[in-house]
Image (cartoon, rainbow, N blue to C red; front, side, top):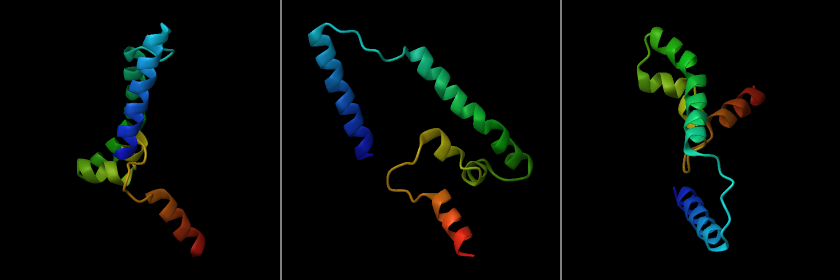
Length: 92
């Protein structure tokens, strides 16, 4: 969580400097960011839907397909699930 707060703070600081210099931000408009979020979520609909149709609950379907990690990125303080699985496969 600290990383997200530091990132927000850095962004705010740069925004203030841009305003003081009279420069427009090159960041995309909010509608583009919402579209990107839709793409991330849309990529996960079919894998999560398959798990749900197979009888899994929503929470376990999201966990088994790594949907939350894909949409949100690796959250601070959580172990990397995919790396742990691949290192176990190499050991056997």
